[in-house]
Length: 335
Ligand code: KG4
Ligand code: ZN
Image (tube, rainbow, N blue to C red; front, side, top):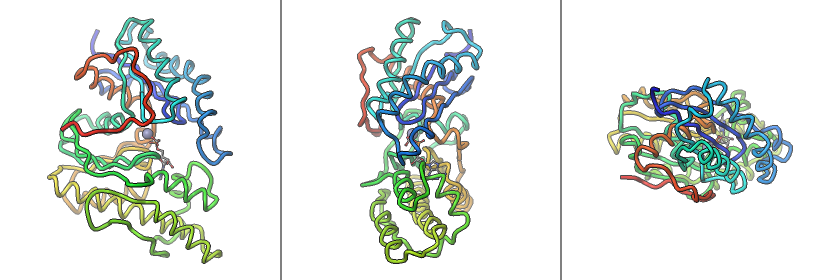
């Protein structure tokens, strides 16, 4: 038999996902069942609903991932699951299932950090990525600038001091009545607006690699209160422009300061059209390689969990079966 087949399981938020990946690079299957419709009418993810949906969806999702990969249960070499960060109830469903399968099949269980998994998403699609690269990891819960020097070797350069970028998109979209999830809704409507219409603030733009988005959110609310007839598309476009400006400026600065060969996007916000376009422009201007994973690889999926799990298994060995879910797990520098 060639290669190590890892079954990855992801249930940290509102996507129930399973995938089979060989040797951390060949994706045999990747199944994602989104719960977006279940949460949309509440305007955000409801943790209890998410946990219950994971319980119902996980078995069929895992079964489909195995069938699509064309393998029998006994040909899985390890089971990797996201243990954090995320919603505790949601995480527990995936972690318990993964440990049970590992026990029954007699194969290792591997605990995976969801943020580290996002870092591996780009590597899955660009296995020959020229390192070091600066990864801009922008999701609903996190905003990080990471210097990736090698597989499993990375340094956190900056992060948000308040809201995450995706959180800002979601909160502003909700305030503007654009529905949930907010990122794609703002992305769509912003195409019809003028990004220069309103000069929203760009917090701590001129120094370092950290971010702050809560003032921007307040500025949007204040502007709409003062100008109730303002065009929503203009507000969305100007807000998005402010977020993207800061993200791109800091990622470029980090790449320049650390001699990175490229810039790479990861996390749900990396699906944003404006961000992708601006990162491409920045890379062209600075002579950097741009790595923009496909949109489905940017948002939560289990292929990235399986890939991260394979690297973890090689470097640290199996995780103990008493490893619990860690809702506040952080990503820490390894170098
Ligand atoms: O990585 P992800 O799927 O889940 C987390 O780990 O958080 O990211 C979800 C976040 C949400 O905040 C969502 O609004 C945002 O990614 N997002 C976007 C876009 N697509 C998803 N934000 C801006 N533009 C988009 N096109
Ligand atoms: Zn995520």
